[in-house]
Image (cartoon, rainbow, N blue to C red; front, side, top):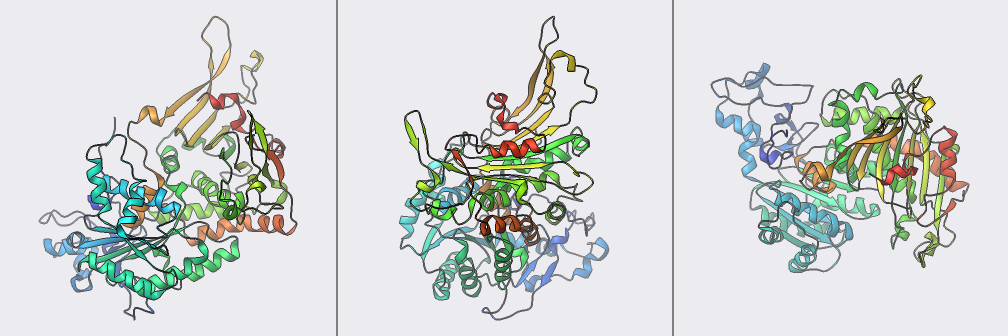
Length: 597
């Protein structure tokens, strides 16, 4: 039985009630008004007025760890009227002002995609925004601007974007009409990324569409990190909101090591406060990753098992069945450790291993993730295996080596594969190996978390020829593709004899749910618009993550350690199997059972 929910259940624009943060909860309004409780997020935080050139973005806003809602200074209400949670002295009109309900109708959100002509914008960001529009998750008044150096008209932008838009499989009605309406709200402005004058011109265009409404602005930086600071500086001085919120979504990579990441953070904070910076890792927006905490904290059967007493090891596996394919020049500057392990896999590990947060408030969740990261020791060279794919001929077709890419130096030592073993030094996970494996040009495309449980003490069925090492229970959370959660158990094969078999208790999302799973960018864009930071990376999280990998990366590069070569389309370098065997572990994705699910 499904629980009922609004059409866009995560949207504040659907007037979804949200839980008040734990630090302060305000009691219900008086019965005469029948008003709902006033959450802490509705109390204003003043920011001193400064010149446009020197002020940080946001003039007056209502702060909460989870979201930011604008309040007009002229309409601010004497907060003494809600002292001790009593709101009987507030009129209904004042309450609507305080709750922001009256300003919502008179506000607008302007979304600027910086780098609009790039692949990420075309393939992910614009389609995600259209999906949100189709689901009625965007506010009534919104405008989308593309900004890039390329010369383009509004019509050319709309033609470009229209080629990548699709409607939900389960919602085809009025698809063409919805597309036309959405494209009608898309505009383009050409300009340099380091030109305050060009951003001032963008500001004028945005204001025309805001039409005097309360202005809220979101900038998505779909650009290389070396020009982040130019855009943030120019936008803050010339195109920030004068009376609402302004937020910036920053795409990874967030630096190349601890030093460069810290420098980037310091640079951003010259013009932004932490609450305005939304560091996006799209894996945190994937359905199965977000379901991690639900699976663990809302099912009694799992929580008692989630510790070193019952879990033998945890494996986080990322594999792609294709190479760099034209992205070699970009990839060679980062490698698989920076590109996948330090962010995607490490974030999934932190969510998996964290203690129960005090609440679902963004700061409470991120606090627990930081504790996990700070409990881990930096990686040592002996705990890591690196590889690079080489040319391989199969079925009469020759697959290229990594260094065959014309944008990659012939003597490149950049790893396209890495396996690592990490440990969390706390009471829950002491001694449990957490294995990571990530690679390109492997035999399959898959991202999953595999939890291998310990052996059954004194197993009664050891005399029936059971391979006890392979007969342990295993929980598999498949993030992509074919999203699924399944538990491997031992079972008796029907018949007169006693023969055991491994079976799967399987939740295959495609079979259980008819609704199409939203793309990760849809969820993250909606959260950024609403000011929900739970799935975005905080600066101290980033610092702790880089502290784990920076010493290893420096040693690899300073000693110019050569990666082990593996054939394109294989299971990766042999060294990865020896690394697991050193900890008496077998990679869970090597079993033939892995391909029958």
